[in-house]
Length: 40
Image (cartoon, rainbow, N blue to C red; front, top):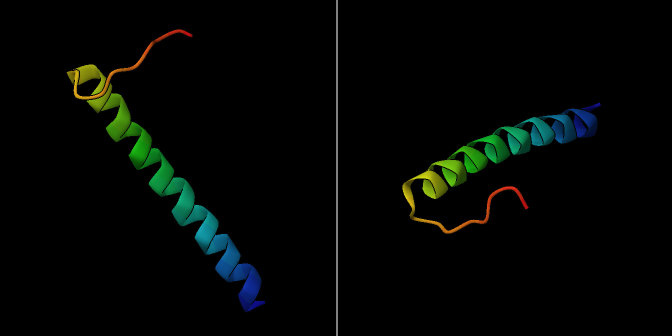
């Protein structure tokens, strides 16, 4: 069914984007551009 396919495709794209966003956040914290408290 096309609705199920659309939801599945959205979920995969959303997960991929979340992984990219997290990697950018990690890099920003490591470089000091974003302050974060580690190990809380």
